[in-house]
Image 1 (cartoon, rainbow, N blue to C red):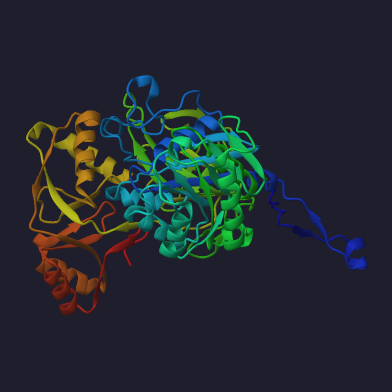
Image 2 (image 1 turned 30 degrees about the vertical axis):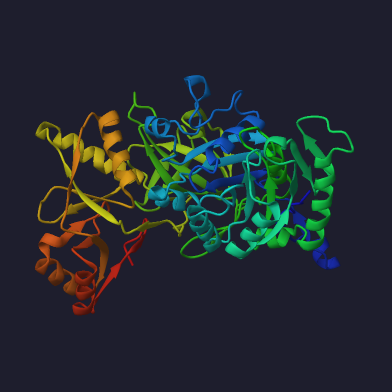
Amino acid sequence: MSAFPPVPSPVFSAAAASAGEVKTAPNPLTGEIARRRTFAIISHPDAGKTTLTERILRAGGAIQMAGNVRAKGERRRTRSDWMSIERDRGISVVTSVMTFNYGGCVFNLLDTPGHEDFSEDTYRTLTAVDCAVMVIDAAKGIEARTRKLFEICRLRDIPILTFINKMDREAQDCFALLDEIAEGLALDVSPATWPVGRAAKFVGTYDLRTKTLHTTEELPPDDPRLTEMEEECQLASAALPEFDQESFDAGHLTPVFFGSAMKEIGVTDLLDALVAFGPPPRAQKTETREVRADEEPVTALVFKIQANMDPNHRDRMAFARVCSGRLTRGMRLKHVRIGKQFALHTPQFFFAQDRQLVEEAFGGDVVGIPNHGTLRIGDTLTEGEELRFTGVPHFAPEILRRVRLDDAMKAKKLRQALVELAEEGVVQLFRPQDGAPPIVGVVGTLQLDVLQSRLKAEYNVPVGFDSTPYTLARWVTGDPAALEKFTALNRTAMADDLDGDPVFLASSGFMMTRAAETNPDLAFHDIKQIGMQAG
């Protein structure tokens, strides 16, 4: 099992100084922080990500009966897919946060959307985790969405564990799958377990690290599946690298697990590995320095907002990663963006939409903070230090639509709803400076379906969408006088985003290029750091 040594704090005494020795005082936070495991599950749609999430929760004792995304009957619905549109369509469209205990560790599991139309939500979620479990369909191998999510993890040097799912079905050869991961992702692979049997004859796994066999039935020593497994394990050990903690932590090597989430085979292998060598909370970057998890002052990063988790109370929940220190109920923190104190009266741990009050949380934990629009994605909370965590971006939308409201009496309600859902990150909201109806920007059309569904279900505001003459949106920064002149000349194509930052809407790539070439004092950005002015 990996050891996580405390980071020593030098304490000098006169005796020690005279003897030339340095004594260290143990950091009281180290033990609690070292047992935190905060991870996300990523995959292409239909690879079995949400089913694996349910099985992990069941293996961890968090639920009594695991559900399937497309199961029949309410009693077998998934706990992580709790919105009606998720259950109707059999997909995840929001990130769910679930906290549970297993093997002496506190797990914070984030189940991310697999569909590419919700890539921004997934990207922001990956700012809050210390490692990721990449789920691969054993028959299909690496798919497009898996590759994209992996690239995001690589940009952040996030360690990855690979779970090859659906071994109970017809699948590719194990060595072919390992080669595909190694060559397709330029990643060293080290098998942590090996399948016993294939397809209908798949009965369990062999743990190469602990040399133990985990099967669903007793197998005689001469069972051909065991013989085949032994031969393949010998070949794998000779041809593939052994697990190396340092290489894994750096994101260069992935331990590979085989299993079937549906049949709950290989799930405990994965959990045991996260306990044994999963990374504890990592240092988080700010504009000025790195914040270590074992620092005593509390810092936290808001990476997600969820509105109306409880429709009866129209609540707004900010999900925050505790980046350092020991957070306690009732403490007051500085809201850095607005410069005011923020009281944590009722911080909460989450289990999908269910919740319980948090008396204390440590670096690495994810907590929910009820608020009424005060907190936004990208906000930083501290005990007084002027810090701003980085790496939480907005990407320029690829689809722009005007919102059509047939009932003019609900115009005020629509404005409020759009602001709340835009703060949550469901869509981006642009208010044209010429007073035209609001424009929403999305990555994919499925986001428009979600927006339409939620406006009707949660706000009782049915809407439609009309096309716009614009295809591109870019944030504009630069010399104030040049920006004012550009805005005056392009009033009908200028809008303000949710933060009031100016956005130029172009009808084509040619018009955007022309605007940039004819205005050298201005910069046009397709990425904006949340919590900061575009730039």
